Every structure is written in C-alpha cells, then in structure tokens.
Length: 195
Image (cartoon, rainbow, N blue to C red; front, side):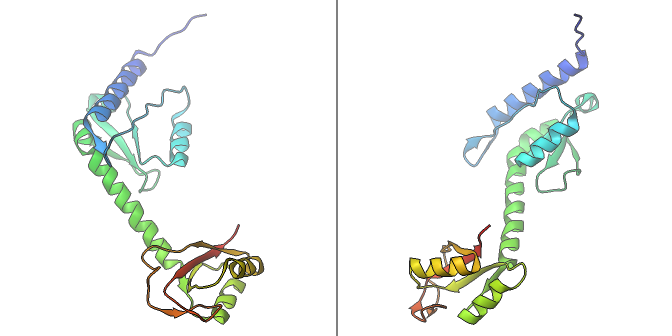
C-alpha cells in the first residue's frame, strides 16, 4: 500500500491547530476560555459544514491555501445565512473573537425575544381562551391564573395544552381575575400546545 500526503493539507492542518490553541489561550467568552474544535475528519467540506450548522456552533472558520497565503480566515456566523462568508484578517479575528461571539449572542437573543413576544397572545376570559385553542395554529397564550393542578389538567386534556411556565417578572403583575375561577390573582401562566 502506498500513502501519499498532500503537503499543503498538512500545513493547513497545522495552521488550524495553532490558531485553535492561540484562541483557547488568549480569548475567553462568558468567563471561560473559548472552546475550539478543529475538524480533522476526512469528509467533504459541505458535509462537515452542514453538520456544524445543525449542531448550532456560533462560528465556523474555513481555511484554505489562499487564506493561509493572505493570512485570512473565512468566517461564517450562526446569526447570518449559512452561505454568508466574510474573509477577515487572521490576527484581527484572534483579537475580535470574543466580541464576535458576544455580537452573535445578542443578535440571536434579540431575534428570538422578538419572535417570542410576537407569538404570545394575552387572554382575560375563558371564552377567549377556548376560542384561541379551537382555532388553527394557535400561538402561546398568557392568562391570569389561580386554578388548581386538577383544573389545569382538565383544561390540558380538553385542549391538548399545558402550562409551559409561570414567567418571571410577570408573576407579580397587576391583579386580574383568573380566567377559570374568577379569583383575583397577580400570577400569570404561559400556555402552549402539547405535542
């Protein structure tokens, strides 16, 4: 058997390992060193890329021979379209990695917070509650809630929903009548479809 190694591939791999070690040593995010993985598997780039996208990694870097010559890295961010690429100076990336991670975190948090807020309906009566869950594709719903566990289970069975949580910051809202018991309560319940 004859094995031939591609010298440029080995040089790129060593460069990737060195970059990973530099990032681990010099950068941190959220109080911990940045975690870096060099994917050394013998698979096509598209297969590897899609696997890491599905895993939700915040930053994917690709480095090829031209990138090495130009001292650049191909940066792909989780908060942007999967095919969006930015070629950035390697040293700049090392300095800015933690800042880029913070930007991605803020971008994703803002996007998902807006999505959450746009998909929660307020409800103040049992009639409204029943109509909401009888409709097609209902979103989440928040209601004043002072019911018992048994009452919750009855509603859950009838409408195939559950209380997902009692949201922080809303547990001590303005007093309102519970949609089921009519009892005055400051507590709110966030309801969602049980799948």
